[in-house]
Image 1 (tube, rainbow, N blue to C red):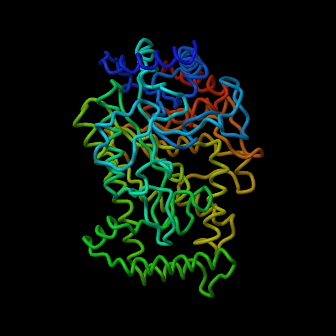
Image 2 (image 1 turned 90 degrees about the horizontal axis):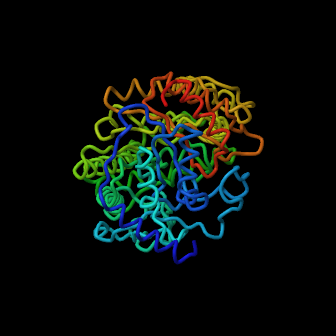
Image 3 (image 1 turned 135 degrees about the horizontal axis):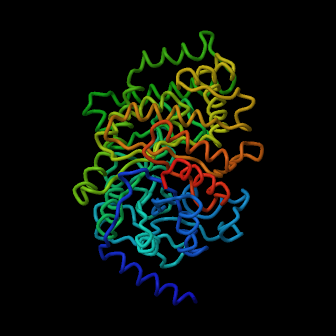
Length: 489
């Protein structure tokens, strides 16, 4: 097929996807899902990909990466990491851009400054229009999977940015900014009205200003966002709640000085923790601003849930819960499963145990240079294990060994207990997520053990992650073997 024929076929498929098709839902039974991006279907062919997913992985639900500007869920393998044993054997560094991998319909984005760009990566190709009919023929469900990752050069993004306390230009959108909120709601409406998909999943791997000031995450210093937001909408919300904006800014500036001094090796005479607590007592506005930030994110969830159920009451919408939930007790405290149950049909709780060892070790190193500078790294890890209520490898072995399947079982049980009877919990199981050369690599038996541990913990399903384009087929087969051993397929 030449390029012109390919583009014409994509246009026909896009039109066909607008015609409602009968769907047989598997979401009431065990959901066996996988995240996959458009590039896999373009590179390998739709039927070939679906053959692999069903025959090897026993997959019954596709989570199509429909919107992102990031490589975490879209594009081929991350450059520099080993290419998997399927798909094109080359990186897409020169062609990856991101955006909406379906077809944006302008009428749903009238209330936002953010331009609904169609991803240019694959020309006119529409991943939902292509995959949905093929999935229907196989009695597979299709969920649109989109995330809070925008490119800073998207037209109109400048009117939605967070305003950090430093005054630097943020790479993140403010959850309270009406342009941001209207953009996410536009995607919800577009996907549900334009395509007969089975549901939606959205994720935001970000945290509030206090957690960011402490670098309480498993990434680099900027992971999860900066200290903010102090835009006009957030400061107006603060004043409405009776929070003194100037004192909040002063408190966060003092907190930044405290953090910088400790990271530079200048520990106060009273120690890191005591002086941190002294700042919280002196500036209760620090914690108040953390709550304001989380309120805006939770309001985003609520608005998306409300709109989705107005349009399609029988279809589910849920959220991707960031891996930091397993490491940081501060972030975990803000992920209230019982509260989620009021505005969620399901949660994909990330329980990536193979890359989890490396990530937990990095979290420990990060907080050991701020709040827990009074402790040794080993003591910080022991404290983390105790408060997070699971125990695994010692620090020196964590990255190479990863976290065991028991971590998946325990985290699943905890989520089920907190969520209540109506909220579905679908643990995210990692397969070949990129990590350091010396860190744990995914093996088929390990995948089988993790999948079985999730169901042993009471999971309603599992979601194989992050993206098919970085998975080795033997490891996908390991997941399928566990599903069949459990007689779930």
